Length: 258
Image (cartoon, rainbow, N blue to C red; front, side, top):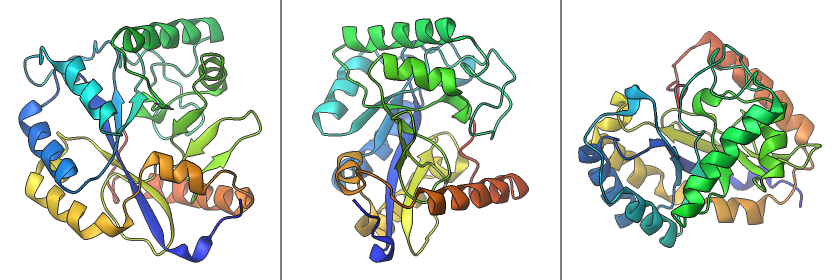
């Protein structure tokens, strides 16, 4: 399927760091906004959170019930690492941050961690459709292990449109840390609910309403962009966008410490 470059912009909403000890007082309002506006986001779930930075509030005893509820609503569940603990200094493939839970580890260790995370989700009848790497850091061994575990779709990279790489991994780009209008392209807005950009729930709600006509969801994206025949164009854009993001660190919202 050829790209329809002139069709105007489309936006995905991706919410990271979903775990039992997240900031539920903020989340409850954000969830209400998403439901009322019929927005189906990507929710990136940490299977076994061990990161003290994500321990914001007492754990919700109904956490997995809530995740299954989002899944039943048609929201896209992503596996967001394993324990959200950074153990290497590798930049990985995207090159945005120099710390990782996965990049730089050997294949066997990465496979073990991913399999353990997926086992936790499976035991809770949660079925992830995407991979979301903590801190955007992963490498070719991560993708190889994911494919071996039947996860072939990822949310990352700075392309203008989705593409399938030579190994069969489907990349849905994730470029933004806050809402910003562009005339064309597929843009994923990475949301961290404790970030001041998004924790102002009133402002978040206004953005959802203002951008609603452009907001799509993962199933629609996968139907529309089955293949990217203009990968060279998307790759060139990705390189330029990555450089711009490094030079203007945080100017569009970092979306970095996922």
